[in-house]
Image (tube, rainbow, N blue to C red):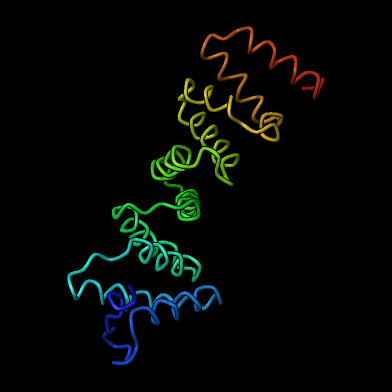
Length: 195
């Protein structure tokens, strides 16, 4: 197996193999030397491309993460897209995309990434936050049916938030779910009788 991977990298010296270059890049990445790791990952990617071989998808994801952590979030997105097109997904990449698109106020792309995360990682480490963001976005878009369904999946920490309860009251009212709307109104009154 190692023999098959020992392709010589252009620009890395004739004695450096693909395996050791990858190890070097990974080490730089874990040491948070992101710019040098990015350069190394790009050299490895170029090695595959120049030999007309399939680039391992995780290399694109790693290169994107390096850019993202080097304050080049926008430049990271095409690498994440290449990784996805090659069939690679991971929770962290999706969360980085979600954050980037939220910061850029790109609702459609943020929503796409949130829904992708929810579908791929229903038990993921960030699913509570993802469900919350989806709920807020659906409310914002007046997608009340979707918001109501997402509300059912909200973690207690979000469901008990006054702002969420107020939104859910509106959702239930718009959907004609009067009993639920009244129950939420009572809950809101019990939390803050002066409201």
